[in-house]
Each structure stands twice: as C-alpha cells, then as structure tokens.
Image 1 (cartoon, rainbow, N blue to C red):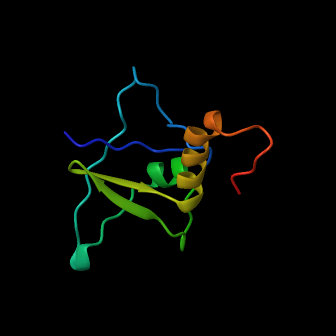
Image 2: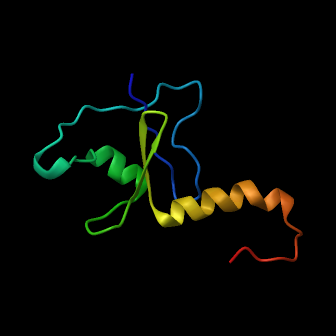
Image 3: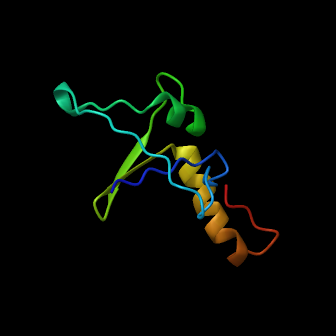
Length: 88
C-alpha cells in the first residue's frame, strides 16, 4: 500500500491519524516523470515552477518544499531552543 501525505506550509499534515491517508495512482512517463495530482498540489500550495524536494524513506517517496522542510525542522527543534534565540 502506498502512503501519500500532504503537509501545509506550517509542516502540519492535512489529515488526522484516524482518517484514511489520501492516495492516488499515477503513471511514470518518459524520463521518469510523474504527475502530482491537482488535489495534492493544492494541499501543498504548489504552483508551476516550484522546486520540490524528493526523498526515499523505507520504500516511500516523500515530496515537500524547502519551506515546508524548514518549518518541520523548526517545529521539532523549537522546544529545545531558548526563547531568545533565532533559528533563522
């Protein structure tokens, strides 16, 4: 079973654990291209020309933007940083 999760700009998932994870089938075309379904692009706030980061994690392809990755890391690190320090 494939798992596809969309994250908003704040790094939060668009679905709760109790909900079914959105998924879609897509074909690999010439040159290894795949189409990210419109519903997913909207959930990720992607527009034509946006750069996406792709990673492979235990057989699952994950896609995000640099901004989403930064927000996710900040969310993980913030509880361990003094309130007067910047992560920028």
